[in-house]
Length: 632
Image 1: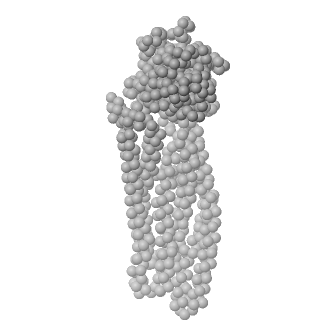
Image 2: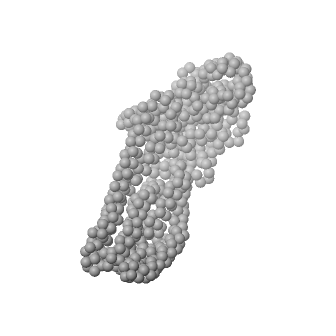
Image 3: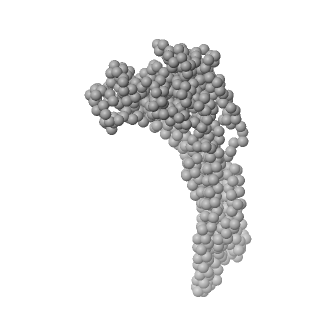
């Protein structure tokens, strides 16, 4: 709260000129509040009660002129408001944009995905509530001040009688304000957590049903609903404090004045002065206090909470982070197949994917393949070249010259028999890694090799000989089903096609269409059926490296397991950008990309070494499993 006050006060000090003009027009606006009671008292005492209605009407005419002047002041005050609010909004927008750019372009930093929301939504909330707050605060100061001056002009005793409960109401409201801010902040956070939990559950509802995790997910979302309801009830209870402060500061002065009226008359106060005092309280002090309390308790709380969140998100960190240390150190080099920066969470196990010579005991590879163990320098069978199917050496890639690197000095080797699952949150670089391996993206530094051939400058035919990529959106062209399946290997025998169809679970679709020679209309196939066709096509490809970039996201878990199981036993190497965490359970090695140092290992190892991986697994297996791992 103090940070918000300091930031707002500094912004207002920089707008001293517009604030001065606003104060001048606010004084003109408050002229009716200053004169209303006094002129009413004169009209009653000197005019109507004295039998001179013309004099009374004359005093009321002066009040009408004051009202016109006040209306002009109100109009000009709103015109001055823009000179204060709009620069404040521009400064805040500049702060958000600058902070987002600094965070997004820092080496190893996470992308600022919330910056657009803060700019387009939260900044506008701050702008609107700041404008309302300025108007209600200056309105109270000038209107209440004018009313108290008018009361003092009638008699100092009346001003004292009214001022005591007014100050008491203000003190009560000020004392309750910190609690109101805390309740508003709790409500905003609970609402955000509920939205996040509900959005996650809806996005993964198919997987939730497939895994039978409905009760777990419903319980998690239900807890967030209960927290949000509790926060809303606590916020609603703050309305009682607002009402109490309004009663003490707004209605109690009126009651005290009415009760004290006989005593005031006996002390020589005229009937007109008593009526004028009532006008000051009823039309000046009470509405001003009501506007202040409602404005501060409503828009003011939203202003404080939202601005505090923006300041918290855009305040640069002064403490060193792990990401900064990784960016400062040079990447490792050598033949390690999955070598990462020195600040990785823990050293890679000795049987990491395709580990280099002498790094540890070799993996035996998939049973029955007849290939040499990965990590021994074995290249394509029969080549005798000692090359791996794919290799990244010190690769750095970023989307833009000043953007933070998605991969920074990244090394990876995929030898024969490698089966690697790539997992991580959205935007962490999984599809970027797939694009680099496939030769679709060009790195800014380092080398990408496919079968020992650099991908830079390699033509489509060369790339197709070494790798096959299955993207998320599968392509099926109009023609026979057999033409679609043999597109990457036209010389494939019917027996090979039949075996692939059976192995990957495409047989039901083949029968429904009327056989392999049936004409395919892509528009009548579902997204999952198109993915199965693309999977069989890639399975038949002679390319040794298969890259599945969420290529089974439209399949149910059983069909997905069938497809990945088939590719897992296919000669060569396999990289799966995982759509479900079950893909990681099937893989021999798992690579985690989460914006920090990449981490590679087996499933059981990563459960103990990576909080990100435990969280991903926890989304599927529930809190007890994740908690048990965290405690081990």
